[in-house]
Amino acid sequence: MEPTATETRGFQAEVNRLLRLVIHSMYSHREIFLRELVSNASDACDRLRFAALSDPALAAAAPEIRVDFDSRERTLSVTDTGIGMSRDEAAEHLGTIAKSGTAEFLASLTGDAQKDSRLIGQFGVGFYSAFMVADRVVVESRRAGRPGGEGVRWSSAGDGEFTLETVERQAQGTTVTLHLKEDAAEFADPFRLRALIRRYSDHIAFPVLLRPDGGKGGYDRVNQAQALWTRPRQELADDDYREFYRHVSHDAGDPLAWAHHQVEGRREYTTLLYLPENPPFDLYHREAAHGLRLYVRRVFILDDAEQFLPLYLRFVRGIVDSADLPLNVSRELLQQDPETAAIKAAITRRVLDLLAKLASDEPQKYRTFWAGFGNVLKEGVIEDPGNRERILPLLRFASTAAEGQAVSLADYVARMPAGQQHLWYLLADSESAARASPQLEGLRARGVEVLLLYERIDPWLVAQLDAFDGRELRDAGSGELAEEGLPPAPAMPAGAVPEDLCARVAAVLAERVAGVRVSRRLADSPACLVRDAADPGPQLRRLLEAAGQKLPPSRAWLELNPSHALIARLAALPEGPAFESLAALVADQATIAEGGTPPDPAAFVRRLNEWILGAH
Ligand code: ADP
Image (tube, rainbow, N blue to C red; front, side, top):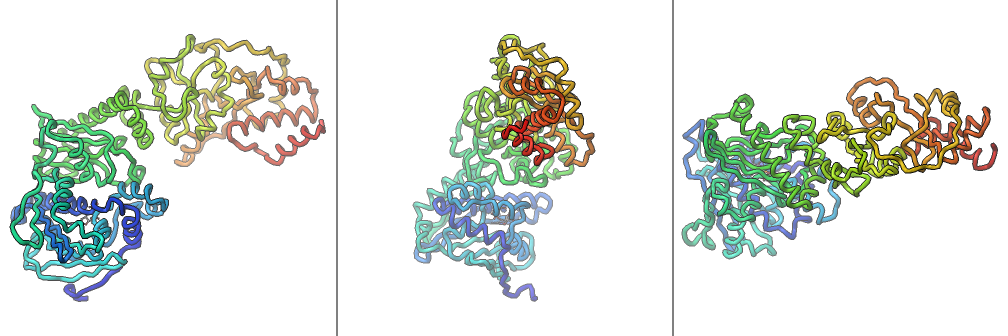
């Protein structure tokens, strides 16, 4: 096909879905389309300035963003003098969504407009939000540096297709024109527009200009046109920081907290770091882009500069502006630059300080943070031993003493009863399985709090974390419970269990268990299974096996509660089928109590029925 010909193409399926969702679920904040268009225009100016570093001929026009409207025609346009798009780029950028995981993300939306609008906001609705207010969008663009007066016109009614044609265009940069819907005439009103531009663009580093209705008169600058992070902190309101967050993060929500530092001295740089309120949909996609936006002396250099953040802080958004890095710095050079490493170390500490401050001053917000990002932060205990002392106080867990993940290690230590020396935890598959575990009974009876760990990363975490504050961390589900380091147990009715019971049960269950012993950890249940101290446990075992490691099969210890009537009954039985049946039933129960399935479920049902029906 002739490159100049008019051509109609279909949107990628994901774009169509996103368009429909945006139009329906974001309807009540449809004015955000203007923020998205101004934000894109500003990015385009940033990119041109960057390209001009290596090709000064590119920076022909002064970077600026112009807004025109015509209330009679009901049109609104946003023009920038930025990098522009070629025909292919327009087709690619305004017809597809390149982010990995998009299809899964869109499939996960609920259909509940309120919830979805939050999720879509985090996804970054961008350019497509124009279709909330326009029934036709026309983009004209010329890529900076292209010879001749050739540009591209992209147009669409947002109904599944767009048209491309090659047009005459002298000015480099882009003009996005919206043909407003009848019910969106308010966006061709000078007062409304001025207020919106002020709100959405005061932090934009380039002039944003507004021209009177119908182009009658000159442009008037609406914003300060100074990069926000270069302004003194006292001059900036919370709303200024919030707007800038939306611009850098592509998140329509609010940041939870931020920290703005202007560092001077031997090293000179500015950081503005944000904690988001809600996790992005791709937090756990390994290849998802993350990192800070890098500027060198206010010139935009790179998006997603991951070199300034450790992986476990990948949720942090914001900018770093260095006065010392060379303007021609690349990702590869950053990787090796000692300056980068020093700034990364300082940023890491600032984020950890910001989290500590949030935890102490605004616990409710910290809880929100923890719910969204706690499992990512835990990776830091493993990844960054140098900052472990700063990370440990930030961890939160569920525990036998509190609902939800609200307990810090310091809280735990502060309320340890006299006689308790260690910190205790239990690994399980879910919070409810952990809370119900018989393995906790003995510790509970002694007044010992147990941290309940059921997140995927927790087995790794505790494998790395052997002590806090000079105290050992101990696994409540493993090894024999020693009296040493524990408060005394309340007096329990002395069990009249003959010494040989354990050996008799072990003989019957030799295939199933590593051994049988009298338990100190039970109060109400007849028996429980306890891992051998050397066994990695089912959670870690699953992770290791999924990673391809071969492990020897595990067999747990069966612990019997000497004060339980069922165990007394068992002890009273002579050798024979009844003894064997009850011993196996006790082991089955112990398996079920920890959320497992008996090795032979049919045999379990048969045994249970024998006892219910009085066969023995
Ligand atoms: P995002 O900005 O989050 O990448 P958008 O949907 O807003 O998503 O835009 C998609 C892409 O279209 C941008 O990444 C950019 O490459 C291109 N684009 C949009 N607006 C402009 C513009 N004014 N100038 C140049 N490119 C643009």
